[in-house]
Length: 354
Figure (cartoon, rainbow, N blue to C red):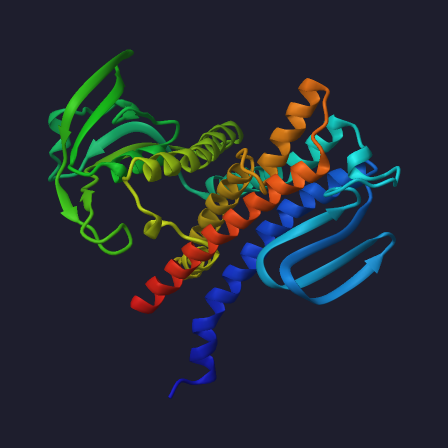
């Protein structure tokens, strides 16, 4: 029989994961909220979570609430989804202010990720680079690569940070890799660089071929400038993974069954708790940056969809009818919710199966 202590130890990682997920949502919605307030736009409600409210409190003109399901949140502004005669309504604000308010949530997510990466790297003994330091004793790639080579691209994918080297090798499926490196000041293309491979565990996908990483990278001591530079590069690398993911999905390299929704994300964060604080922070940075970038995509019901419409209105000096914009966002929201439901069902199935 499980004791209360053992049950708590199993549940605690999931509680931490949910709290971190809520914090990421809070940062996103706070970006909308603070920019709306600074722009003089009336905010009716600031909510964390969706569904029935747990509790709420009203201060001034704004109601602050916590809701049951920690899978979203919202900053409800006057005149956001319809016409309003209130002089401080969202729809009455200048286009540039509305653009700033809509973009602020995603920008805050990306900024949070950048700050987290800065914290992680500043506490490390060394910061990774893209330059090869040495090879392991059983290395085979050293027949092609040399110590001192700076890795610029893997299989055509530009390597912006040392993290991209991991991604590039992980995406390869046969252990034969094309590299572009900088060697002795010259850019060199190396074709068919061979690595030892093995079959992966379930973390990478059943029976997926995984490369034996047989070289080490040069590390540099953290300094103010090196931390900022490396953090910026890693933030860009994380952000680019959204587009790489879409590319892999549309080209069939990954299937919908390999995508994770809120449930799968919470599970990954909960698992990272057992690896320590740095692992949790790394996953958190990855998630918040990806949420920020994904929200900027011009998809109806996302901030990027609204941002796209606002930019078109600003450039054309025209105005899309509220009912048409609402219809576009409603259709987008329904499609998005259906996708989330399908992915969440897959997350639950995978949890049960294991």
